[in-house]
Length: 509
Image (cartoon, rainbow, N blue to C red; front, top):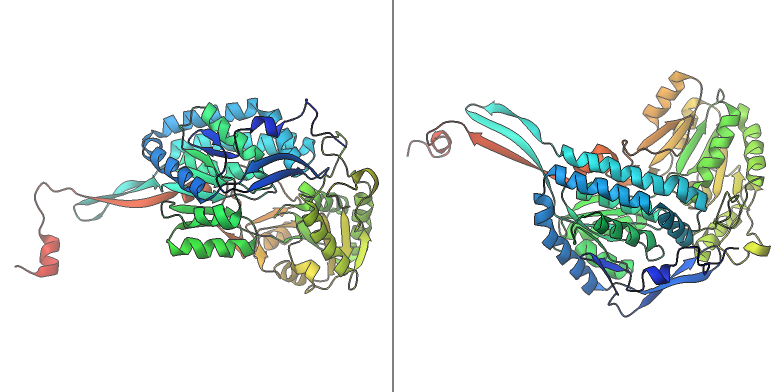
């Protein structure tokens, strides 16, 4: 296993010795009086211990963001765009630090961090740098006699955002970038388990010339720092990514101060394979879609519905491919699958599978590796077949490397089963028939439906859910617009004082 103390690798304790709060352009220590450890999930060893943020830190971060808002909102779109293009450049220069820190705190293979997380974040930054120049309202028009109307899009103010632990760097980007591109300032609370890349991200913003106070980080517990941030009277909008259960609590708090709200919540993505699909492509797509980030992905393929003529071959093909997945050290170049985020999460995933043994068939995996991997939070890729549609393992979000496979007969049944959970974040349909594909993309209730693929995302296209998966979009121009508010402006084009409305309301008095 890798040694976190190796001098060639990212040294969190050295880099963040001044603290894990980033407020008004500098690192500080938290004031809660409590400490927290970032644990390497591959070894179980602490790699960084820091003081958690308290409510005083949240207040200081919000105050810094509020102070920075007039200047940043008043900058021209071109000025914000130029700063964000520099930001993208700094992130690219810091790519190896970001990749190592992400893999260290999350346990994801370094190859994935280098080739997916960091390049995706740089690309997203460049996209929103361009979007900053397109803060457009609506063209003028005469809709009422001698009056001209137009619509302005304006920044909202201070945004308070909460990001999860599964993609800390990308989620920081998805929260911060559209908000600041539109002229807002932000206070981001990353998960306590994974603050390292959020701090590096904020430091890169400062280095790029984004003014102090525009991007602030508070690293604290959800029930303390998180709830205080959501309920803060000077925070105008809340953006949250996480579980549906916690999302409901966030909505409850935000509603008390009538905040703008953006929620990206849980998922249980169906993977629907029709009987004319390319079987080999579907098998490989299912394994990749189910195991991305060790299954800790709200869009991961978790429920495969396979039309009966292909069912047995699909189950066998997935089982065979899963057996060849290399589970191991995230920093080893040949590792396909790293550990889960923590031992607690691994045990939670194992509990789902162990309970399913009484009503379903565990075809592959379902074990905790031993030997060199024993100290880490590892779990073998797992395939479960023949569970009932209403069973726990089909309906609940597991958030681990577990794929459940069920058969279906008619196309109607496959689509009905795909929609039969509370969630609606993502889905995929596998078919060579354009009519089937069109029907599936129309009738499956999810914010994204891939055809003959599963997982790819693009900065230019929206990401967000239906139903209990939340509302609002990340990435794309749709996300950018969500961080603005709309104002109607109306001009009286006559040169004299008008009495028309006065007469309409009060008569000729």
